[in-house]
Amino acid sequence: MSSISGLVAVLLTVLQWAGRGLPSPVRPICDPRVLDRFIMEARDTETALRGCKAGCGVTGTFVVPLTNVDFVVLETKDTEEQALEVQSGLFLFGQALGAVRESVSRAAVKSLIDNNKSNIHSLGQVLRSLHIKDLSLSPAPAVGDSATRKVSSLSELLRVHTNFLRGKVRLLLTNAPACQQNST
Image 1: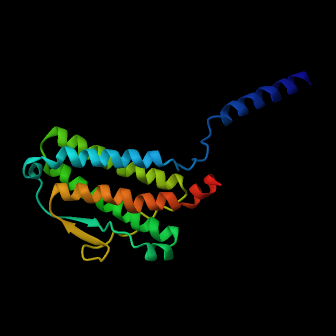
Image 2: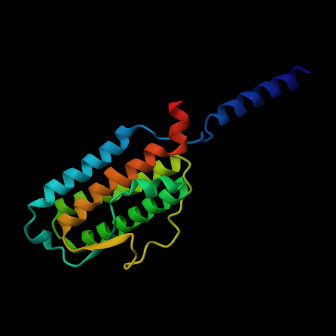
């Protein structure tokens, strides 16, 4: 009998120890300082590359999302529609920054671009932490879409990126239901 109770005690100890290794549910990332950091880094990149001669060799046009926010229209959209707009925009910026990275030769510029691409990926993780359905598999807006426009310079691309983070991304994160539950 004592060997059975000893075995059960060992088994319970092992199970308890193993249970600690189980992943815990991701807690929502609602702290505005997280997004502020991404915005600051995007702004720093914009400032650092503003003086880049001839756009650091970047040529071509890039499709980017519109950054203007119509609050009347915004109030009619649910979180999923706003999330689709943000995720599509982040996808477009990821594509544009990838193209920029391929066309520049300076290591310092590539490093700044890589950091911004990494931040876009991290923003996707933040959205997932807020239990916002990942809609990134949806097709991105087309070039002629009314929700996009073309930019032809690196400085303009970076300025639009910063404004997108400060506008649409901030509004989505601020109004996310998971963050509203945490604030009450």
